[in-house]
Length: 326
Image (cartoon, rainbow, N blue to C red; front, side):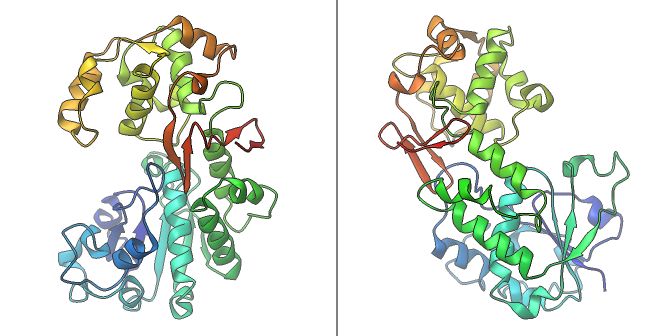
């Protein structure tokens, strides 16, 4: 029987190449941006389908090739029970932080189902999933999932959901080699905490740097990931960070379309052209922040989530690069 693929990236090639019976792109939750989903929400998502499930809120809604699957008659079970229909369940999660967070979530979940763990294979995708075909890498190494992988994942998952970044910082001194792509992700995530000197994270500082160099269009800031160098957020999250840089009491960026001040963040249809209309420049205050002569957070409100940590001006955990408590 062909395997079941659990992944964090919609890759139809799994099906096109007749590699998998079914592909589950577990895309409902975003563990990078905003408050973390509650334990009840997570249990409901991976549990059996109930009448209370809206479209998209159950794991089975995210299957590719579901109608042709050999196991298409079992969509209402919980995920672990569904996995029992397969001899092999492969976990394909690449180097992106969003993918690694989903991996540790799933491994923590399967730790409660030892009868499934023996069927799990972890594919070590040490590059962006989009580049697999280009580099002829459709057969990355597959390793068995053991207690080492499960314990490492559970520790990291609980740390990410903690109300402070302390547990994540402490993980850096632990042996995380069971999940070799995890430690670089943790470092990148920690670098998105506000800097002890500027009050801004790595992505915000990189945007200021690029704008100061003359990159005035949002397309470059949001999409040119090799130029941007940071990899934590997606297009809309970079937009929200840019809103904060431009619309505070003392802005670091000028030229962001004024309509974005009042548009709801869920109104992606109207936000997109507003970003495209923008012509950005750095303010004198922004130059001072970029030079580490001013602290953005001393003049502007901070209100965002880093895992389970709610970052505010009164609860501003910082990165030095060492953890600095509020």
